[in-house]
Length: 272
Ligand code: NDP
Image 1 (cartoon, protein in one colour):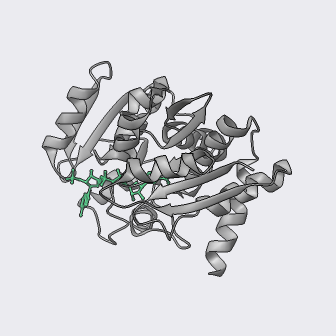
Image 2 (image 1 turned 180 degrees about the vertical axis):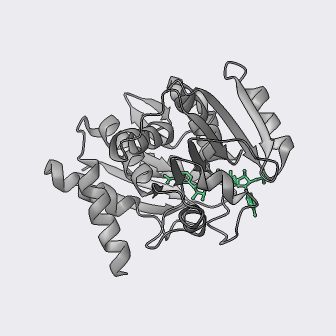
């Protein structure tokens, strides 16, 4: 029997074991997938022990994605573009690193939410790991413009410099006053329960507002967008399930039904 896992710190809250079990049920596969709390000072050691015990594939979450990138023997183009790894695959004696966060976001927005990003003015809030991982896939959708707004302008500038092939505009959160069609929150503001200093008119004029954070109820950011008049909002549960589905497809060669699992996990979240 081969083993799969998600590594993080903290990790108890992770929905990944449930999601991968639901995928395995769809396929009719026996699967062992565990959540592993890796020590902050020895992520590589935790991965090595896992592989020695028969581990084959692992998801990697906060705060280890950069370390997983450094540890992989070989990285896919999309992991190189993101400078981060969220999926490890022990394959024919090589530790392969992939990043499925970007493809997860794009699949959720374009397929599950039905939003075509081509020609759209996209505003991405945040310049941390999640923003970095989705910049290249967002740009590949051929938007009219792509702007990153961040609390600390310097960190947005670092992203701008790291992605010279993207015509990236940058701003602070409070200085935004242009119109945007699609606003994506990739800050950890919702996680902290704070209101971002983004003008409500920016949210109200958007066609679609998305929060990478997910919760049983609307996140504070999505509540603010609704109150400002935005008619279409979505949280990041679809992204989470779609990025997991891309990892599952890499490991097992089976494409799970993402929408069915989003519904099951959301129902479970609402009952809890
Ligand atoms: P990071 O810690 O790497 O980055 C955090 C970002 O949030 C930075 O841009 C930071 O700005 C900003 N920020 C933090 N606190 C505040 C605040 N009080 N006010 C305004 N901005 C703030 O986190 P990640 O990029 O890894 O994750 C960001 C979010 O994305 C999280 O909520 C995470 O749960 C979610 N996520 C969801 C996924 C999914 O599958 N749905 C996948 C990955 C992430 P500054 O530079 O100024 O510090």
